[in-house]
Amino acid sequence: MRLALALLEHVREGRAAVLQPPHWLAEVGAVVSRLEPKRARELIGLLYALEFPVSEGLEVYQRACGLAVALKQHVFDTLYHAVALSRADGMLVTADERYYRHASAAGQVTLLRDYR
Image (cartoon, rainbow, N blue to C red; front, side, top):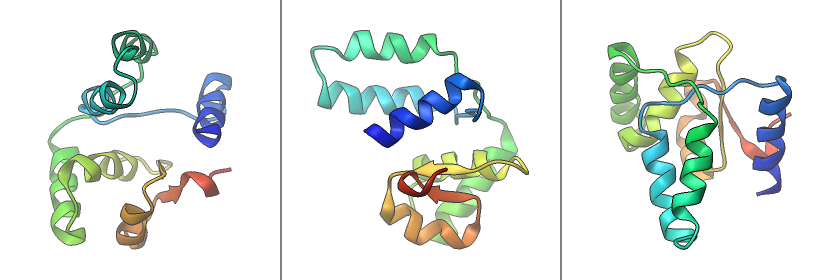
């Protein structure tokens, strides 16, 4: 949690930018509802208010599908990676070590613990 908050602070300071896939808020909402059911409505409202930009379009979906097939991973996970790959300076920062092990060869992905 500390590392994720530090990354969010970098975003707030303008030292990092965020670009999300179209489903990010729904996915985070599902997790927040499970982990913090009493605060879920409040927390999802705060996240929505951050107005993170969203990347979508046919190319992102096609790349995510290609990654899903090649890496044998779920499209909902590969959408984040496809967004990172859609930009020359993009980087997927993930805490999901299993996904990282499968996807690191595709490039532009780092573990949250290794983010600088």
